[in-house]
Image (cartoon, rainbow, N blue to C red; front, top):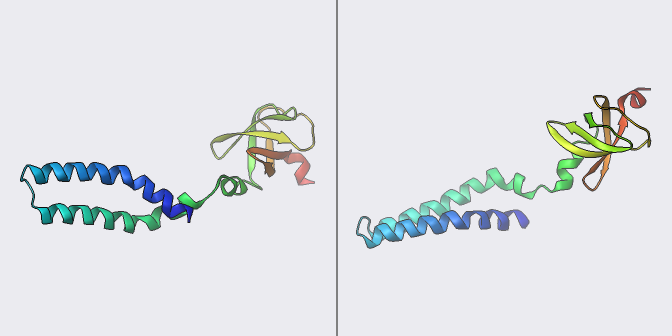
Amino acid sequence: MRAPVVYTLLQVPGFLFLGIIVMFAWEKGWISGTTALGIMSAWVIKDALFYRFYRKALSSSTQDVIARLHGSEAKVISRLDPVGQVSVRGEIWQAVNVDKTTIDTGQSVKILGNKGLTLEVRSESKTDG
């Protein structure tokens, strides 16, 4: 139920802006009342049709995004001692080494899970054997 409400709220400013422009054009006599109603109706129909393209993005949670990282490889960009930062898919994340040891910058780690927005990682050399 969250996605339709969010999408609708995101459309309100554009609808109001268009409404102001259409009202101005109608008051000046540049368009008829029927045309103004047609423009506003077309705008609502456009929003309804485009909803299907945005639904998935609006309904995903932060945990869904992080869960997709599980099992991925990351590069250490700030030494994990045991907490530091890693780069994964072009994004920088706070990370903690589950082995509680130090991992130097530039080394590869595997993402095992997360606690909140902190990724739990382990050195790639430990996961191979």
